[in-house]
Length: 151
Image 1: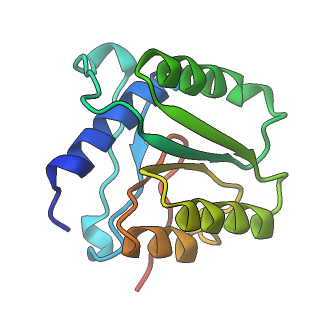
Image 2: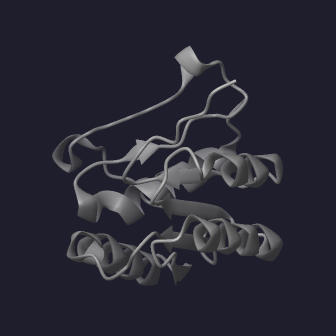
């Protein structure tokens, strides 16, 4: 997949939104061979400063279970950074159920959000809907895992 300026800008937004977790892991490109799966992990201190260039972006964020204390910093970081840069984040709870998580992401696709952030309960079960989002031209980034995409 060739990265356009739009996708690169959205990736910068995702980096900004996920700095609260201390690391960033991007979802693999579903069209790439398994060996070419892109996983980038970097401590927050080593990330270059980034400033999103487009205001008004709509980000869909699905967290498999928002009641888990681990995600409180991620949620706060997403909300704070979105407000700072004039974006909206639609945060949805997957309720620990892969069916609900898939339905939430399908809803984001139907809404044509600019970017989807996913923290799923099942890294393999979420792959088909991640592919659907990518086919719709929506980048999907996971701040907490690399989806397992197998041929």
